[in-house]
Amino acid sequence: MKDLIGLSKDELAGELSLLGEKPFRAKQLWQWIYFKGETSFDNMTNLSKELRGKLQQHYYIGRPKIVTEQLSSDSTRKWLLEFADGERIETVYIPEEDRGAVCISTQVGCAVGCKFCHTGSQKITRNLTAGEIVSQFMTARDTYGEWPSPTNETRYLSNIVVMGMGEPLHNREQVFKALKIISDGDGIAISKRRITLSTSGIAPHIEAVASELGVKLAISLHAPTNEKRSLIMPINHRYPIEAVLTACQKYQAIMGMSRMITFEYLMLKDFNDTPEDAKQLISLMKQYNLGAKFNLIPFNPWPGCNFAPSSNNKVHAFSKLLESAGYEAPIRVARGQDILAACGQLKSKLS
Ligand code: SAH
Ligand code: SF4
Image (cartoon, rainbow, N blue to C red; front, side, top):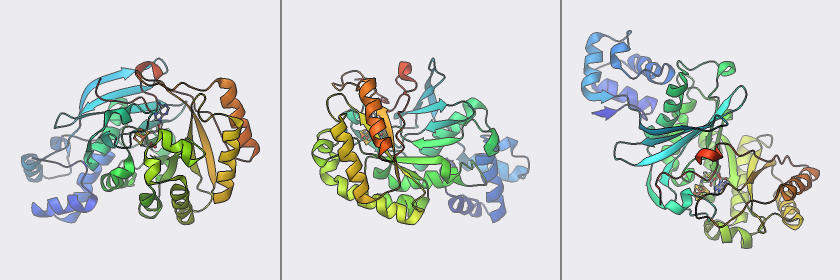
């Protein structure tokens, strides 16, 4: 038995041609799966009984097992999901007033090992498949009953942030395949402008985020100099700031300067939060002439981590300095902290 979730449109057509079916059947099936969210072949009324029978024999439309589902006091929701081999990841929904973002994971654990990140303390177990990535979003839609795919204006699950567990550009092939399925207009139809891929800066793969995918880009920068960045993000030895920002220029050359790149900057007490750090950051940005904005992230603590969040005063002063240099620099409001669902807190195994 084979799971149909995660097959590209062409692959789905290939499977149907193996069953002796015409290509338009693949389109119908695609719509049932990704537009209507149907999981039972029996309900696919415009397919012949014979075809439904054949499909049932060879395929299924999978969802991960929901191990736990937690609701935060601020309405953030977190699912602990389990795949066929027993591996687990977390997916989070962060509602805003009239819309919301689903934060999806791309790996079990993460090899990058950033010192401030709970996922990074877990090491890498394996990459997720495209099907496992797409099905996280589908599970969220199941929970909110948001099928068939609503029009843009009426969606609660309106955005996707690839900011869960794992480094998406360490799993480029499957992540790209998944995001192509998710953004396909005949199915789930989340527009590429509403999808943001966040990376710790795997420089050689950044340009492809524009050339192959066309989704929004966020870079986890977190420090203004290589010296500091290397202390908290070991990946910086391999891909230093210059390599990352040069890759960002290539991204923007394809997407256009108006497609801002978001630089995430974690505010760590007594580490990277002084006016001097802000000034260094500004001159770095000017040097590369990027269409950039910042997102200042308060550090979210987790058991066993030694970092502490910067004081509110320091974060506000930092934000003001960036703004006076012409950069947007909002301070992110941490969501779902009471259920360890905030950025950097996800971890599927207890240690
Ligand atoms: N691996 C990718 C995407 C997942 S992490 C990346 O690093 O960009 C998503 C975001 O959460 C990143 O900006 C990351 O730096 C941030 N983050 C990690 N640990 C955090 C913590 N303890 N508090 C706040 N943000 C954190
Ligand atoms: Fe991996 Fe991102 Fe966490 Fe770094 S911040 S360890 S890249 S998930």
